[in-house]
Length: 402
Ligand SMILES: Nc1ncnc2c1ncn2[C@@H]1O[C@H](COP(=O)(O)OP(=O)(O)O)[C@@H](O)[C@H]1O
Ligand SMILES: [Mg+2]
Image 1 (spheres, rainbow, N blue to C red):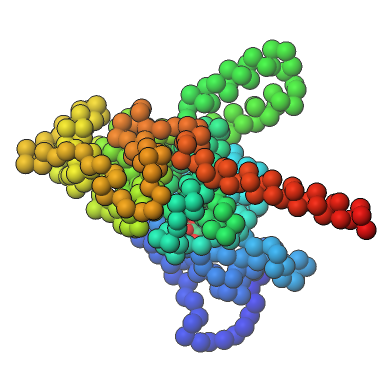
Image 2: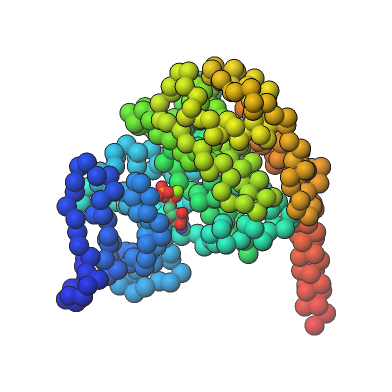
């Protein structure tokens, strides 16, 4: 339903006809007065990427705005392959109801475009707070992010585009959600185990609720995998948050790629610098024996980790690295370049385990969550909990006395 406001101002949005060779044409402008399906009213645009637009919307209850109901509505450009959107919807279904995850509310199709309605999450852009955070605030942020990655791992998903823009964080509440599953992948061994489990359980109770639920999940995983296979592996994420194995198209990539990205975010906090590794560019197909594409990144890595280690790791990734001998460098001690208060041995240890070139030795999410770096945060939270309980008891006592 579109309100006819008959205003012929210069602001009138023009609908441009689809043009097949231009991915970025502007056919998505929703007039602010547009009501979607009588249930949502668009308030403003939140973001615009290569694949579509995200709008902020409020809920409508019998025509009245319900300010308590806020949504983010993701709409694809009609030139974008529907498979990309189907995969993302599948992931949103898999993580539905889980903590630190975006919550899918509704889906519909208008004019060949898919509208994904997600609960709105109140957050602050990373750029506005990251350089002001003290070590305890950094801990809380990273812990929330690791919790999100742990939920994904427990569901056999790795994200592949972890970066501040995809982790919406509310500093006041100390809460965050990991969004944007457009590049995510499924761990096939996880699904294989689920299939085994289904076989095992269905021997005894073939129609039990648990078995039905597992079957439903397996179908969903298979549907997502099918769509991902159709898209092929020509998608790339955000280079500056990618580990070397991704840049070099190493076959064996999994959950570890997300942990490297957490390391880059940690380093952003610690150095108060936003544009780390920002010169890294990759190409979306593997190219044998040509290192000039990656020379920026490799030199940057060599300056941090030492050329010997970088050489070794490139060999492991079957990448023929021809570093000129002049770039022979020694590894840098993190403590010599990071001077923020509270950067103690635990912080340094976690950082070096996240930014570990060898994916097999990189820290796993479950070990990250139990790393001693987070101990002060967990103790603080425990104390807050105890204080809260004490206060509750005092209140109860006072009520009884009166
Ligand atoms: N649930 C949400 N709550 C609030 N804002 C959101 C939500 N989901 C997306 N956004 C906003 O939309 C932007 C783009 O969303 P994202 O899913 O990352 O799309 P893209 O694939 O275009 O990067 C985000 O950076 C954020 O500003
Ligand atoms: Mg995004």
